[in-house]
Amino acid sequence: MPKKIKTTGAAAEETEKPEKPRVIVDFDVLRTYAAQNFRDLGGHPAANRRRVRAGRIFRSSHLAEVPPESPISRLKLRTLVTLQSRAEVKHLGAPEPASRHGVRWEHIPMGDEWFSDQGYTEIAGQTSRDHLALVMHFRRDWRRFFKLLAERDVYPLLFHCSAGRDRTGVGAAMLLSMLGVDRNRIVADFLESNLVYAKVPLTAGQLDPLFELIDENGGIEGFMREVIGLAPGELAIIQEDLLED
Image 1 (spheres, rainbow, N blue to C red):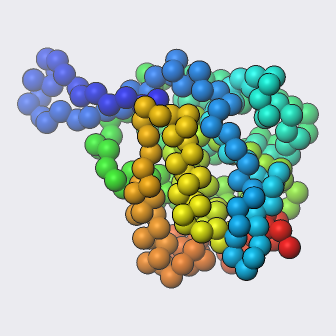
Image 2 (image 1 turned 60 degrees about the vertical axis):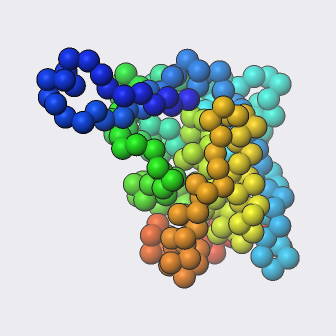
């Protein structure tokens, strides 16, 4: 998990510049969370008395290892989407399901500029708008992700990042919003990650800036069109494929 520290030492004194916070990613700790924080996004009640289809789309932490007892080992996947940066995949390992016969692996590397071989990058201090930044900073990547979901014959599909809670969490929040799931349920799914990462819990308020931007764009359809760049027809395909009749 990321740990915050401040730069110190002679170099900081010599430049006489304010110390910048930086994030240290402990890959050894992250490695222990392989195939955890996993769940099916199906089953949620949606608009118009519909329901998100079960067994179609799943979320998880990184998949460098998948224990035999994990339900992921039994999934008959068609598509695997990795949202980790290239450095994360290099340090943690490629996802195991990508090597399975018949599985299409799509790597959408979100955060390449935020990670290095040392596992850290200097970034601004943590704020309540960090999860909105994960959306806005990677809009092109999210457009690629959702256009992939609008392709036919990509399901069952599993998407994941390293911890399966931040990039994966906002991705799930946008997707469930597209499917007409109530925001209380979206927040509950987001906070379910705290069962795995209890020492660094997420809060419901971290999704508020995203919901506010959705509302500012007239709702999820306007947001997906104007902010993410998804065509209305593509959104309709995703809804058709992931919602029960």
